[in-house]
Image 1 (cartoon, rainbow, N blue to C red):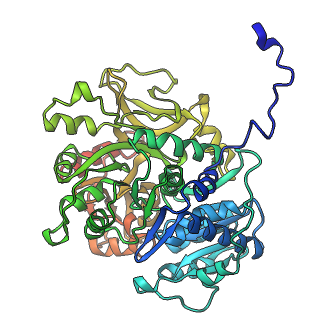
Image 2 (cartoon, rainbow, N blue to C red; image 1 turned 60 degrees about the horizontal axis):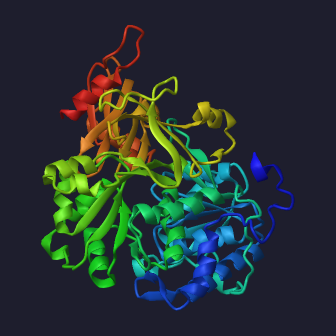
Length: 542
């Protein structure tokens, strides 16, 4: 064993061991990049020194309001200044950040506030009604509401709650951040729809987020001082951890409240945006932008895309417009992206455009912060890398969740055999590149949002005319996938498509609503199980 048999005095101590946390990036940037532009929100601009001071004020104000370390602070905010600041300020006061999807229905928001036991919720004025309605449906104690006014977007503060800027002003810009004593401490709580109607609470730790922020710039060819546009919602895997990453590289965050082609082109042309992430629907938005929304720019914009495998045709159409697209893959449970289609320059540069697009449509290989991402069979045996044998994507690494909040059974199932089971079916090519072939357990990915077919079916089954139903993904040029419902009606009952769609829309978020309803006898096995694979074939051909 050599000298390692005697390590007397070689102990962890304050000088040589500090818990890893993305909070360190902004504390460092406040000194190293003090005068550099950190945030752009419309006409408002902030340096890193100002950004750090505002985050400290908000953290201090939350602590003064009674938020204790380990308690949950929720947000229901689009991609705005307040949301970016909250991502640092909430953990800086020792609390756990819980960003809630602004597109969810009232009942689900109420469930999340209850399940996560939110002490405070920061609510954008546009979504204040959603938050108020959700609080009324809560079973547990109601959280304190802090309203984030958005008069520039036509949503002024109501005056019924403490307003964000005034609330922050009561804080101390010199507040001493409450840093984690253990990098395994919980940093954030995110909810994913998973395979059931009720979302699961996915818990992140500081270590995983820190390593995500260190590995991503390598994969993204990102040097110092990028200009980053917040297209990925901050409620999706905490913006894929990109907002936590930007201070690491002295980058500028440009907020984007409403994702439109005009907003994207304007940000690139006016602010010099160099990087952004987004679902394939964002790529289609750019490709199909009307001429008067397009702007000229003289640099290549690096884009990470995820949410559903982008069609090769989409990739082929967007790159000539000035965008270099890299497909990445991940889940809420993995802090966002953990594979990428790393480009093998010498071997692939000379290929035809169609061949390049086909390669870029692959799911890719493990990113630097991951230990092992591969495709295995049900016995956790590596499948042959022959581009044909299907298996499940299995994941191991530090950027994997701690587990599901208050759900040890689901956590154990997800981690069985020492890997995180993604639930996604894929093949692996001879060069090791993974390519998703199907979504296991019938999750539909619509515009980057997870839609549980079970949840939609559950609502449809409540309609008095419905006898049986099945919901599958239908390919869609705009959204990637949309829910398509196949319905058997009860004998002597009649109902039309519009009525059923309206019935679901009244009970679920709009993106979960079927875009097409087909009345038919459902194909079944001899035991009565609905053959969804047959329905997917039908939907694909429609």
